[in-house]
Length: 162
Image 1 (cartoon, one colour):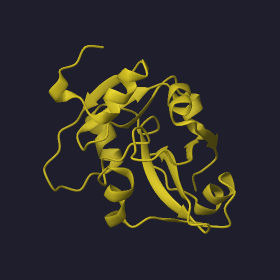
Image 2 (cartoon, rainbow, N blue to C red):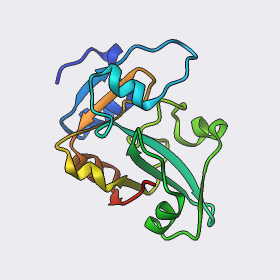
Image 3 (cartoon, one colour):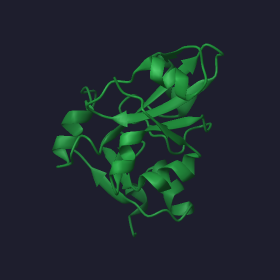
Image 4 (tube, rainbow, N blue to C red):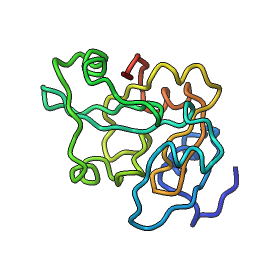
């Protein structure tokens, strides 16, 4: 899929390098404005059940984990902990996100993080031919098959939402 170099994010470069088919989407945003996933999904004309947000957590063992769930849903921390074999997990502080992942809040993608952490995708993703995740920058999203995402991040699926 031809795209100009200026319009590509690191996520798109990774997908191109791995020869994974995807569609790039953009949405309007104001610098410094709060980004909410349901609003983003609607502004792109997408069903919020197909648009996934990326959440980064830390387990009781101090290991980090990535969870992707539909934007309109909330992560069930007990289910998430069970999915990764931890006694408990907690969301990381927003101020730690950039240093840990290379991404800012509202632009965090499971693809192309500084380090690949164990990743779990909510099982509802498998009900869709394609899902949408962050393109790695606020204003950018990528649409790809759940199977391709799972293969790329060496992830698994589980029931993760409240």
